[in-house]
Image (cartoon, rainbow, N blue to C red; front, side, top):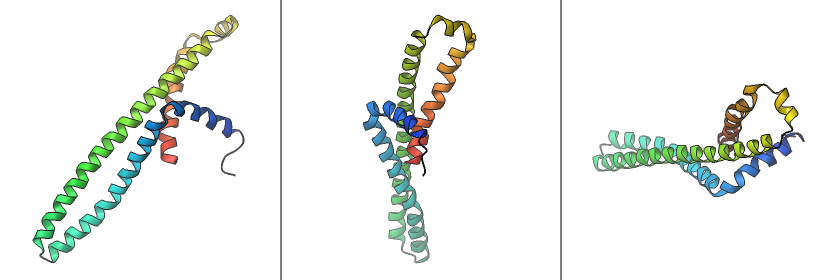
Length: 144
């Protein structure tokens, strides 16, 4: 079995943070797929360009150069959109996680504050949340 029984509740909790942003998540996934398709197309265009150069078909060479330029521009736009969408998604998830953790901290008994060191709460709010959001956005998108 690929997923252990201990991981299922964690995956469900991660999906809970993705649900409000499912449209943006799907859009980011679609942009990644489009980028992969563009990356597959580039070597084929270069091969056509080389064949046309050796065949001395300069009209096709010009067309291939224009197509390669177009593919590179589309690839750059795709990479920008991918970065923007994953970063924005990550920031929204970080905000939601911090809000939930902050609400949990407010409801802790006073004894918990006495037993924890001063920097533990801040460490959990800053470092741990960013790591979890990174896993939810980038790792989950890459895995899918």
